[in-house]
Length: 412
Image (cartoon, rainbow, N blue to C red):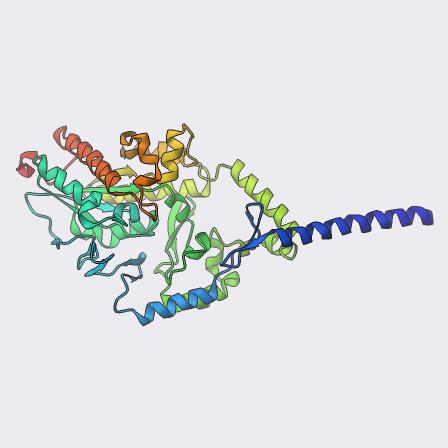
């Protein structure tokens, strides 16, 4: 190769490298770093989410400093739970001595002449942001009584739970109360929470001194990791050394486990290309489909939960509780990403879909609380929907109420 050709090649290479450097600088200048230290550009998060160690340490210290008054406390089987005999929001959200949202106590042994219903799920079951007598769980009990059915409704919902935590609550606490009917509130976002252990990786703005137990599928069978759940005093050390910790491979939202991500992390441009490609590959791979990790795990959890409930002699019912964005998509005629899982659950289980009983107006922001939980009117509609389904089930003898072969025993 002649000297001039070599010079042209070197100039071309230098020009190409200069362009890359300029693009790199442009991305760094145009991108934004959020309060959690995560760098974003053009809608893509480029930094591998790292544990917010300083803020996590503050939350842990705060938790121990006010351990005697914390509303949410560490619980080894489920990660966290409501503190027994506590209240939230100026006493409008009441938790009894069993950790159930209620202003009254319940005996372990159900009344001989009353139908006992137990609810499991997250904040949409617990009734976050509404008063005790506005929550759909409370209204459901009142509606059944007004219809002539003696019933009591035990609300085991806990804020921030995923499907695993709801199931474990049934196993360790709910089952002890021997309910006749178990209603599992399916809030679709929990499909994503099922693959999360440390909440701050999925929700960078939500720093809590707790970690979730998590199911993983091994040979088609469910097994638990982070169980019993790490106590608060161990969270900092584990997060500090997470890259080499066994739990890292089970935290879906921790990108530091991705060796390719780490290899390119020195360059914003290379990281952007890697993140963008992965994003579109994940979109094309149907992240919530029945054959995805999230889809298979959700189905396996519900299958196992339902079998355990039926083996206890109770009836198992699924209840679809959509979020605001899900309602909007539904009324705009858009298919939800979780539709395959939803259809499976509808086909296999006794299923109540609140979507079918809500009007388009309920997709407006005014019907939701500031934290995007249901407002009181949607709670009323949920209670009416569930009550109507249960009354039909009872009258038609399809609920399989083992304790009440004669339903006149629970009629007033």
